Image 1 (cartoon, rainbow, N blue to C red):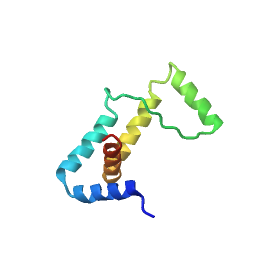
Image 2 (image 1 turned 45 degrees about the horizontal axis):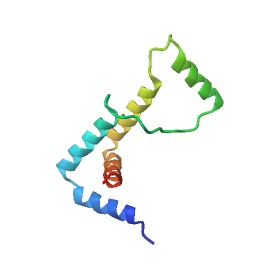
Image 3 (image 1 turned 180 degrees about the horizontal axis):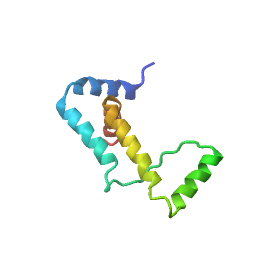
Image 4 (image 1 turned 90 degrees about the horizontal axis):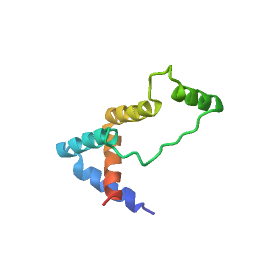
Length: 100
């Protein structure tokens, strides 16, 4: 049994391989994903220990800490996507297929 979505995605990847327009589109996709104007209507959840949850809340609420933890998580995902352009390309294509 084949997965139609995966087959479509594989076809898209083959068509856009070595395509500089695709590379540029992926770089734009990565940049747009974390831009100041991006609509943040999705959440990314992952499990943490109870201790980590307390640390997170205190760090987020503290006036002594000059850092936006949520922004730092988004920045880290953007950096990882930039280091792994093939994975980012796959995400961009899935996004495009889902939003057609």
